[in-house]
Amino acid sequence: MRRSPALARFNPAQPGAAGMKVAATGLLVAMAALFALCRALQPAYPGLAWVKAFAEAGMVGGLADWFAVTALFRHPLGLPIPHTAIIPRNKDRIGEALANFLKTNFLIAPVVARRMRGLDLAGAAGRFLQAPPGQETRIRRGASRLIADLFESLGDERLGGLVKTAVANRLRQTEVSPLLGAALASAIDEHRHVPMLEAAIRWSARALDANEELIRAMVKKRTNWVLKLAGVDGRISDSLLEGARKLTADMHTDPDHPVRRKIEEALVQLADDLQHKSETRERVERMKDDLLDNRSVALWLDTLWQKAREAMVKAARNPDAAMAGKLGEVLKSVGQSLETDERMRRAINQFARRAVAGMAASYGGSIVKLVSETIRGWDARTVTDRLEQAVGRDLQYIRINGTLVGGSVGVLLHALDTLG
Image 1 (cartoon, rainbow, N blue to C red):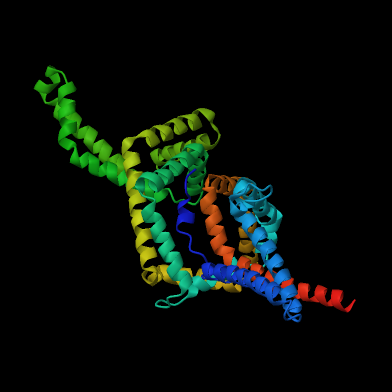
Image 2 (image 1 turned 180 degrees about the horizontal axis):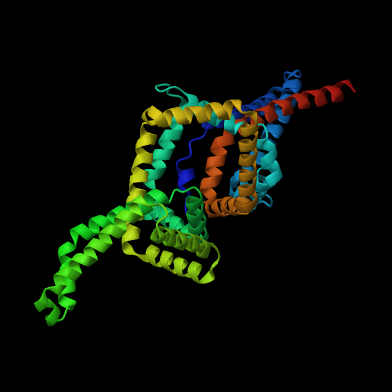
């Protein structure tokens, strides 16, 4: 079985366990020596019977507690006595019990919700956001370092791929046609389409002027030689260009121009089709999927993610700079609202409780399984050694107390026997 890295780095919280073990064992040896001395000298000094009774009972009590303490971690004297080496033999069962204890007492939704009821997460967030620049609080330093380390450790291949995939999947799952139709209908109702329409008309006029020679060449190419000989092709080109320029000029100056009306009617029909016509909606969705599959769009999303990631790491590394300027003012305003608006605080805290309780309900079983499987994978000897080091000092106190209490009981029993 493998040795757990976590246990290999374990450092006992209570130093001096080895020294206490020597003291407890030394006291037991002292009791044995005192018992032997009193037994040898008692015929000459009858009063030593009281000391002998104390040493004898103390020796028995010390041996009993030594056996009990040792039996927790190993076989006493290496003998395979039943019901000894309890921790190594029951390591897996202890892990299961610990995992079930965590699940029953900490990782069920009602318990999590009850324990979080007294936490004011919204107020804490508000105070964090309102902290003035330069005020380095432990929360700010810890949160900033954690966020920056998280974004830097989870690089583009992992976190970036996850974010970009999530964005692309969300866009694929979202039917954009009704959204586009509703946006277009709202723009038409509020006449916000007029500047775009006039810009399109101006662009058409500029396109005519920029491509005049191309238009003349096309007309000349499609005119037969008789008309070319008579010079009619030039007059046809002039008429076409003049008519197109007059049309664009009239459309630009006359809001009620028939062509503009036709364009606006077509836009209204398009908005309605985007929202209600199945053929149009399916065509838009196919166009959306083709666009998401385009490599240029993937590169664009990658560029957006790179810039966002760099900005977040930079802000996390220097939170005071991130809290400065307009963004800082907005964040401080949000923090003030979080701290003073009782309804907002209550709503956010309730949402946080429900979110954490939901996570406990959804992932509590997985956490319990992780704990039990982790303990099952630990090396039994390592677990035993580390646990003994962690609680060894207190266990040796039990041995010392057992020796002294046993000796006191021995004196009491000797007194009852003598005086009875």
